[in-house]
Length: 129
Image (cartoon, rainbow, N blue to C red; front, side):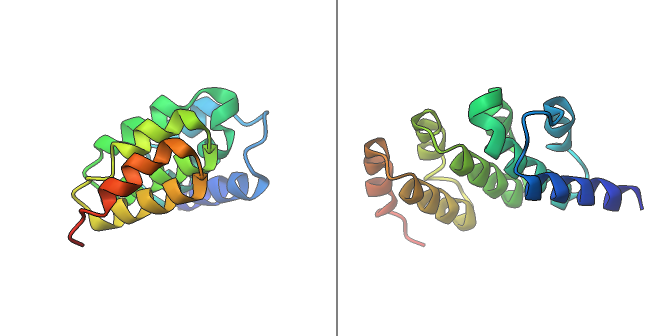
């Protein structure tokens, strides 16, 4: 089916690692695809490309999704970018209503090993989950 083709294309791009020649506009469009696997793969590829292509804002917009899986994919994409620029966006999600998103945020912040992550990690100690 059509979504399987898009899903496989996104997986292939993910495996390649998001080359400079990838069409970022199509990947940005895939962030709102009906298929969750396509959205997730596009988030990861854009995350790998993010520092080079300026897609952080597009990734952060997915934090408005009612689907926790989309928000986790966005967190993971920011983790892939891995620069200090993503820390405030991640820190703002420490209080996400979904525990799986909060867990992904704490893991991403820990992975980054940047001093700016400490306040957000400390606030996670107040989490009751």
